[in-house]
Length: 315
Ligand SMILES: [Zn+2]
Image (cartoon, rainbow, N blue to C red; front, side):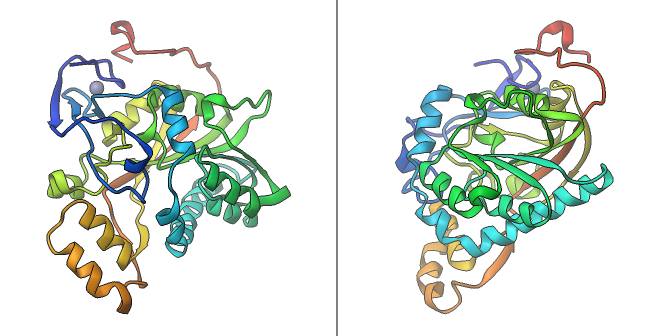
């Protein structure tokens, strides 16, 4: 049993006991052929959940580089609508914060959100490790912004700082979520915003669906709730502003496909029946996620480095 990655607590219990086999590209992304989320542990103190077997950052980056993105890319219409939700969340918060400026999207996928942000007046930079998605994002953004085929840990921005950094569906995938959040915080201008969206273990969907919750995935290493997410931000010298829930848009065909991967009864059969007739219709789906908005403090450095210690527990 290991320590909680967020609060450092040692009181950790098994949340889900599933086969903990190795991760390879056939088990990752929307095109995966089999699902096994592995053994998931949960901190009894802050509620953070995490996969017991972790991977090296380099190993993980290599896996994402080679990921099969066919199913992801087939859901283009839904991704466009989900991206516009992201943009609305960003703009609403930026408006309260004095307007747009420089935006960094970490894990920008095929660049749909960045393209919309460009049209809304943001100056954009995106990072995307998957080779196929990076190429698509580069084509979509062209010379209007910067797209790099990197994970954040590999990127160097020199003196450049951003008005907003976004992590849409990224934090659950990384080996060291607190480190990633701190790095994002360091890249913000004082007063800049960090926006992120993660699976929420305390969501109604997660609690009702249990083992069949669609966000229990092999590539998800971290599962937050609002307490642990807030704490993760505080450890990065970020001030928490608000939480919200974002819905995603998918075709009926895709929803049924995903449910059948989770062995939800009848989903496979319905998927075959609905496929031709109504499968293309888009529906908003609430998967049980939470988005959070943090702000970099105007003053004060980033003194919290590495794992929390007993001395920093009370902060
Ligand atoms: Zn904890």
